[in-house]
Image 1 (tube, rainbow, N blue to C red):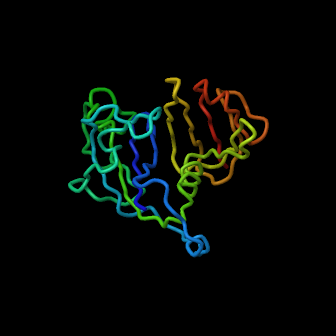
Image 2: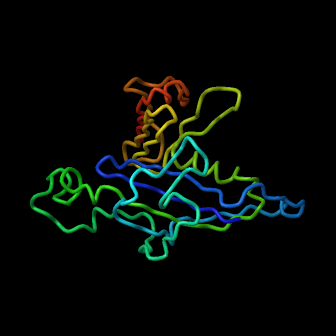
Image 3: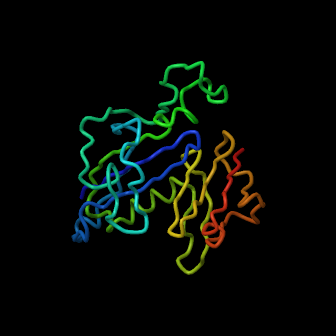
Length: 218
């Protein structure tokens, strides 16, 4: 089974749209494959990188298979540059005296919109024992810092995301944002819409309102 991971990053917001496109559906899992040992995959290496976004808004989260451009299965990124993560393209840009001092005089932000968005893509091979996407779904939830604790409850348990900022476009047109604050590895406190959470769970209703989830680390 082949799956493509793709990320669209936007600076200065440093927003992230992260998704996984399933290229082959309904795999048949044999009894032998279901008993295979678990495999740990390091996803830091071999990403394809493109600075710019001439394709526009091509991610359609409301319709499966409706994505275009680099978000579309089968898109060719063969001529894109190969990079390893972590990677910060802003660091690579030349200094520009006309750029904003808050961006370190790097040409990003207002007036440098062509440098604000970049794409990262990577294809990986997964066994059909992936359980029709369960393993990759687990990875995406953990990568963004929220996980459905119970299918019967409208709440997500909050963990530590691997990204500094994630912006998720919802079906109602609003954007739910997750921000990691601090350099630690353990959660200190969590706020949603500026108000402290009582515990480690965020309510789905707050997410639908487009509130910002801030995760403070220590």
